[in-house]
Image (cartoon, rainbow, N blue to C red):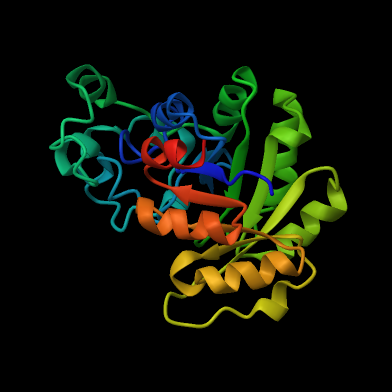
Length: 270
């Protein structure tokens, strides 16, 4: 049986601001097998790393642009987003209590102040330089960029960087994008995300033709993992932070675990 992969979710975001290269570096240092990040697009078509539709939670956009509420990233140019501080909020909010627990050193805390929102190009270069692997989640884009050609644009960036196809995984809840990716670049692995809604059962039949499925852990108990593995599927689960829970999935044969705490799960699977 293959060893379960530890996937640093948005980087090691318990130790550094999510979707920054600092978080990716912490995941790398923790020994994660790969990291996961989210793709957003600016108003002028630059691919960036960003999760929420709004810039509010993880940048100081409300202070820099007080009249631009709700601060949707697709309504800002890359030059405007470059002006934002994407790191200070982590020190202020301590989202996973790891600063209070003494697991983030003062030097790192100071270094996070003033971090910028990275581009996808920077993320791919970072991954290539470390001979690492990245899982790129293509997120549904908010207005006015719902129809932006994100798949071919991503491949343009990938070509520019020259990263090897085996260093990239593409995942999305928008399965039409995965089909587009498969037709354009069959050498790049695609992974179907399922379980978008926390309170709705997963329709496993809808992703029957995908070899790898990334599923919400709370909707996928260990016995379901065993069943899917027996059918020849690879199952990655998001987001698993508890070590005991992770152990139960590892024993069930899960392929990978997305976690905000790679520093805790890596020792479990080694």
